[in-house]
Image 1 (cartoon, rainbow, N blue to C red):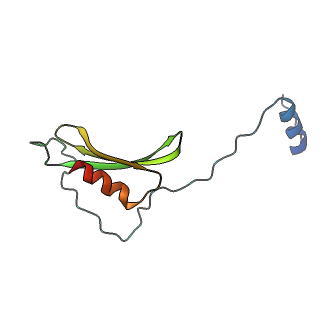
Image 2: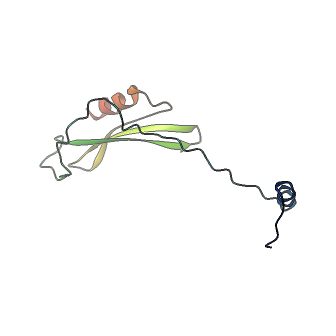
Length: 106
C-alpha cells in the first residue's frame, strides 16, 4: 500500500496473509566448455539431408524430472529416418549412459 516497514513487520504481515517469499536459486553450471579434451570435427556441417539409412546419426543427452527423481537420457537419432534408434536412461551421468544408447543403436 506504499508504506514502509522493517523486515520483521513484513514477515509478520506475510505470515498473516499466508504468503512466502520465493527464494532465488543458485546458478548451477551443467556444461563445461572450457576443457582440454579432444573435440571431434563437424562432418555434417549442418547438412542434415542424407542419402540413405545407417549413414549418419546424431546424439544428445538431457536430464528429465520424473517421479523417481532426476534421470539422465541419452538418445541416438538416425538422420535418414529421423527416428530414435538407440536410447538409455539412468540416474547418474556416467559413460555407461552413452555406451548403452550407442549399443542399442548398433
